[in-house]
Amino acid sequence: MSDVNRDICYVWIKDGDDWSATFVIDGRQYADPDAVSALSLEAFDELQRRRIPAEFETTEVSPTQPASRLPSWEEYRQRLALDDSGRPAAAGTDRITYYAKVSESCTKEDPHGVVRRIHSIPPVDQAFARDMRWRPTEFLLRHWLGTDDYDPVEITAAEAAVIIGRWKARRRADAEAAAPALIDEAKARRS
Image (cartoon, rainbow, N blue to C red; front, side):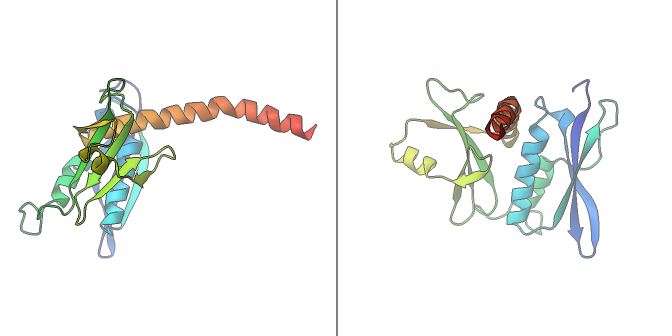
């Protein structure tokens, strides 16, 4: 638990004509403050894929504020995997497995890349790309065919969110560091 304010994201789902707060992504539960953004993106992608109308409301939360009684994204996602009778959904319908791309020089904590398999029919493989979006990939197929230099190591959705959050933070920092130089360059061109 952190001693500074963190982001918390409440997700509202439309049921008929009504909207209700359905689950929460609480940044106080993760070591990386950017985990809320990464998990919100994951939740958004999954709800959009399922055509579930949702609204995301992110705000700051202090460390002393009581925890929400709403389920977490992880708990809600598990409920999505159940059919109407409460039994596990048929295999291959909506489960997502995450992998870190590792080698001798990359660990699962600091991998070369992150890949996910959506266990739909047919399965969909995606890699988190440099443009900070999920893009189609053939990495898992190439690995299983023995034609890729990296190995997939299964990781949890939370671990993937932390890695992606760290990458997004680096990208923001790089953009902020480059901004003054770009401004100076533009001023020089105008002169």
